[in-house]
Amino acid sequence: MQKDYTYKYGKGKVNFTIDDSLVTDELYIKQCSVLPDPAESVREAIRNPIGCKPLRDIVKPGETVVFIVNDTTRVANSHIFMPILLDELNSAGIPDKDMWIVFALGTHRLMTEEEMVGEVGSAVAQRVRMYNSDCRDEGQFRYFGTTSYGTPVYFNNKVVEADHIICTGSVVHHFFAGFGGGRKAMLPGVAYYETVRKNHSLMLDSNAVIGKLEGNPIYHDQVEGTEMCRPSFLINVVLNEKKNF
Figure 1 (cartoon, rainbow, N blue to C red):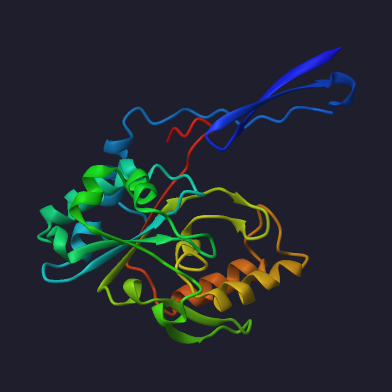
Figure 2: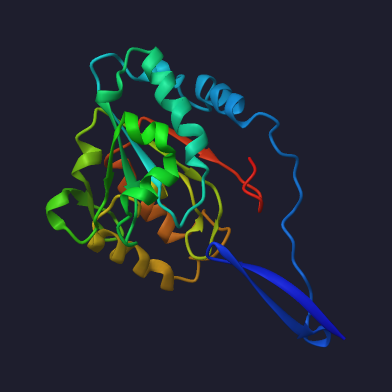
């Protein structure tokens, strides 16, 4: 007997048929209830965060803010929470001109203007400046030190020149860094190519596996590097396979 499958591919889909005798099993993501009002949940989270003061109490008028935002390869629904973050800081006395976005490309290709707008929404794109982090342009980066794992740590100038760094992104399984999200917005997100290369070379370690943080050298090296230029705030989301919060 034949079984029909449809897989997502890019912005389209691929259909194929396979003999069901060749199918060992089918894995599905665990079903969890979704947030009824994601925008309101974001407001609640940034006003009552875990382990730090509310966002509006961290940034003071006259200070500058950079947001690190996922590129097109990492889904976070940034277009939903970015307007809320800007509005929250506006209400705290931070004008749009004192805020900007740097996209966490890691070693990925540069984003087009259209792709940038697509990630954060046209309203946000019209309010604040947006930049790519080009890991291969050494002139864009500042050196902060070397980790105990031997990784030279360089971060993008557009990130480190701000008074406050706000990391955003999504928590997902990562096949050698354990989990995505958190520190990965900084390293590899807005790090220099050599920083990423040295960090990722640690994937040869037997502890560099999916779903494992403690004891994973990739993770510990990334945290150590990020601590050299510690962000002020972090918001991460968890999405299901339909991109619902």
